[in-house]
Length: 323
Ligand SMILES: NC(=O)c1ccc[n+]([C@@H]2O[C@H](COP(=O)([O-])OP(=O)(O)OC[C@H]3O[C@@H](n4cnc5c(N)ncnc54)[C@H](OP(=O)(O)O)[C@@H]3O)[C@@H](O)[C@H]2O)c1
Image (cartoon, rainbow, N blue to C red; front, side):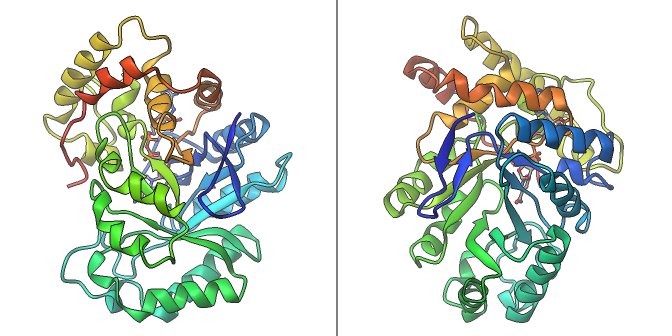
């Protein structure tokens, strides 16, 4: 494993972090179980992972509790990032909805305290807002909450989880100086953070969590025109209708261009994220130990060579399957 500084914080995070949405299970992710998830988390710690991204909303605290249970017996300190869910439970934040309906001051503090209890800790290493709307920039609610939570020691650092495929919506917030890290969709299909967000985070020394690096599984090469998911789970929505066929078409074109490049498609997808120096950690979702093992071997491969990165440029795919 290799480690990078999380922006201007003193935290050194593993290049492979652990996305803990899937291990939360519930209605959103089916097909896993807690015992298997605990084995996967423990294997990740053995292989040097020291950073986990969870959220209160990942099955109403279940992911947080499971992560905390696993971290208690880890061989080293595990840094945990979590998130305050929007009070109106609407993802992503919608234009025109005021912050008083989404992140009122008292609510942000109360939810942070709930997460502290779920995580059985006195300080959250990185607390994030689970959605962000740039219209809230000048509002006092979130600014005061961040300052007070830091002063009281309940959080160590603060970040934003940026709305899907809208990296530029966080630019103004970064300039307030209150943001220590951002979490953004960054993968071979969505390379848009490279245009404005990454240069700004580098200038301001803000950490970056590259989320959904495998495009919810599309970049694993396991989804084809016939793929179907349990009707209630999140991925049945994400890969609805004709989308599996579109994925198959894009992935086939990608694999054709990657002929001769060493590594599997998931290896190359994670390597792609780590090849950008603005990225502090990439956080694939992993419920199985075998996925943990292959993903944790990726940092040793180093960055992708320039000619491979050039080939990948043309595979950027402008879509929003979250809508
Ligand atoms: N709004 C937000 O803030 C937000 C939204 C989405 C995600 N996130 C964060 O980002 C993390 C990552 O996103 P995600 O989990 O949704 O999607 P993802 O990382 O793009 O993909 C996860 C899927 O890839 C599979 N996988 C992982 N490694 C693999 C490998 N080496 N080979 C084959 N398959 C592999 C996983 O399988 P198994 O699970 O079966 O191992 C899972 O089905 C989340 O867990 C969460 O922490 C945040």
